[in-house]
Image (cartoon, rainbow over all chains, first blue to last red; front, side, top):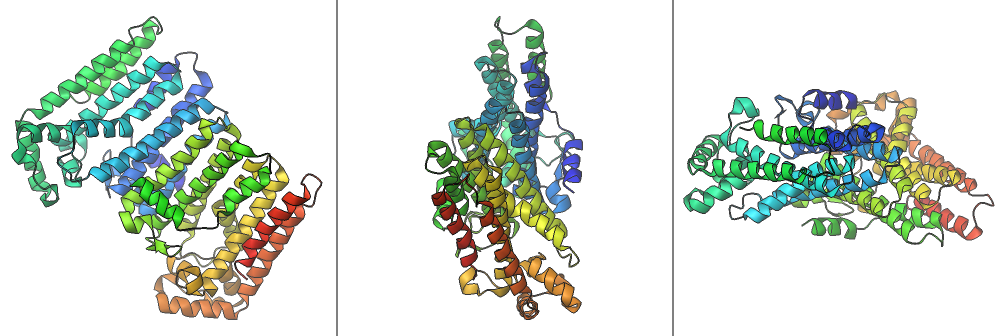
Amino acid sequence: MLAADAGATLAAGGKRLRPLLVLLCAGPEGEAAAVRAAAAVELVHMATLVHDDVLDDAPLRRGKPTVAATSGRAHAVSTGDLLFSRAFALLAESGDGRSVALLAKASTALARGELAQRHDAFDVTISEERYLERCRLKTGTLFECACLMGRDEEALGDFGARVGLAFQLLDDVLDVSGPPERTGKARGTDLLDGTVTLPAIEAFATNPELAVDLRSLDPASAEALCDRIAATGALDRVRSRALEMVADAKELLDSPAFDPEQRHLLGLVADGVVQRYS
Amino acid sequence: MLAADAGATLAAGGKRLRPLLVLLCAGPEGEAAAVRAAAAVELVHMATLVHDDVLDDAPLRRGKPTVAATSGRAHAVSTGDLLFSRAFALLAESGDGRSVALLAKASTALARGELAQRHDAFDVTISEERYLERCRLKTGTLFECACLMGRDEEALGDFGARVGLAFQLLDDVLDVSGPPERTGKARGTDLLDGTVTLPAIEAFATNPELAVDLRSLDPASAEALCDRIAATGALDRVRSRALEMVADAKELLDSPAFDPEQRHLLGLVADGVVQRYS
């Protein structure tokens, strides 16, 4: 049953960005420890997806039924717990204490980010700083963790954190821009959940009349609000910021500490994050 | 918000059996590492309680409102994730790899036990062996882990596993026997949830007519079924088995590897598990 649910979650796809970052940062000499770390970081990511779908009562993820939808919420909570435990067991088996510490820190950040987002729900006055802090917790830290698990090098951690942040910003743009056939979910899902993201914060700053009570939205009026947010030019501004973050991230690798091949491959991953959304 | 929820969960009480076992097994020379391990095992236990209350939609735990009831299910899932992550972060900070491995293994068992219980729900034909395996996963392994975190000694792990198993058996007796004013929940809650425990398995074996469709139960008929299970003498038989397990557990400590003071204190904990239910 677990195998089936975990298998379905795995088979549903995903970009495997985090394990890719572990392996690329570790480089050719990474070997078994890097493969374990790569698996562990993806297990934690899967655990959070399974739990997020419980939190959001989501029927679909990546166009496939979620564990919560297929096997029930209770089953999904336990499945997430199991994936999470297996990640730590995997690292502990090989005595990789540094990776355990990194992953535990990142998991703590993930949960804090989720709690912060729930805490902020339906608050249309939250600041950009607060939003960015949430993104760092929710997304940036696990990307940073993936890179540092691969290799203990500060610049790699910073690279991962920036790429992760850009990834989240672009994901939030996509929720407003759609199209649904590409994102696999209706436009304005974040707004309906009460999650105020950077496109909305930017739009509310220039057009305060858009900061309506999000609890009053229905799917149709959420889509209409997306159109009005897009009309302010906020999406382009947020996209530009994400592109800058990725450019900054790539610049961090411009050092003799990294060989050209590694720099090239990590640059491709960073570009891939952007291209998916352009 | 987390601090408030975690604080409320902590303040709601509990017997702190698991951290007590860590500290007693570590003995006087345990010091800081044992205290961290004790805190970590209780954090994992708290995480599972918070998640269990989401799974069961429970309004009360230890007579106090649950996190799920106070702050919502979504918040409770994240709170559990955070408590869980903090447990591993705590151990990782001090580089206690052995404890990380033990705790990861126990957490995996906990989640597997929970999944097994959901899988078995409403199946009145499950065997005693299957039930005992579930109890080992759900309860025994974390008690065993607590003892082994305190001190790496096989006999202590076995002691913990047996005491944990006895604890679970007696807990399951209490669900049938009540009284509610002592357990803080209605009699027959397990039966209503479809959880078939040893008292029911024993009673169904001698009185097959009691193995009714549990989905048809309401609170009143569940209580009536509890009375009929009790009338078969099953509760006394299960209690006796739990007492035997505790006696066996104490015998394991009858070795020069343990000083008399440590043996005495661990014996008191084992007796305390029994006395709570007698």
